Length: 58
Length: 254
Image (tube, rainbow over all chains, first blue to last red; front, side, top):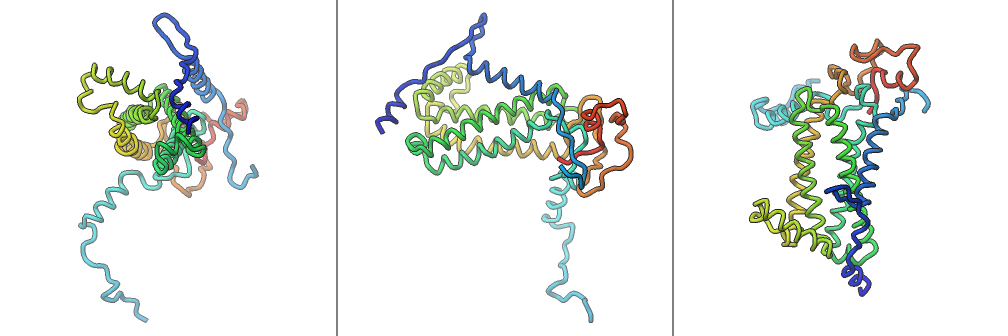
């Protein structure tokens, strides 16, 4: 219980941030957004697995 | 031997005039026959871009199930027990996945101009689902019952008061926000998502720009079309790669 109380009363560090002019974003959020953009680009570019014909062995 | 119906088995009068018959006809007419759970989709659906809508829906199912488990244990359980920590983390990360897939789904549909073909209401309900989900996630952050939630609630209180809507609810009232998060907002988001799915099934998924949706030929159990592909799709030729052949085949299982 003391560990729980200690964990609850210790604020989580804010983490590193990136500043660009008036824009400020945490590195974690920036990495997440870049990863989403990468997934989107890959989804557009990568071919989808071709469907198997009925009766065809996979 | 006579098979005439007896008094007990003879249908009673009423037929299509009853409210149950009208309701049944209305429900059946919401979506074209065979399109509630179609097992075939047009060839252009065989693309990763079309995956994110259902990935978002799958994430939402995990969000709801893990949230229901959290309601069984309560706040102290998810703060103090290892199983509670685990379910809490599942809830958090499924929400992260839900939003990531929803935003990628949004990007894909935006660049596809998914409101084409009388799909404006489908697009609008998707946007409403997005904003409703934002509110639900926000109230989730408020009920963490830690310093993080205190910070978020006090900052949000100022912002909402400045926007002129702070009189209608109090983000620093944990009891109110708990009920909003576990009852009110999930019902709202669930209704909007249900309407969104209904409209997707009613209108069909939007075709890519330049392609045309087939004329609902994808009935369940129908034989695979043996003739040439739809006029809108290029005919597979000897100069095509295997990937291009796959993309232009006439139909694909969903």
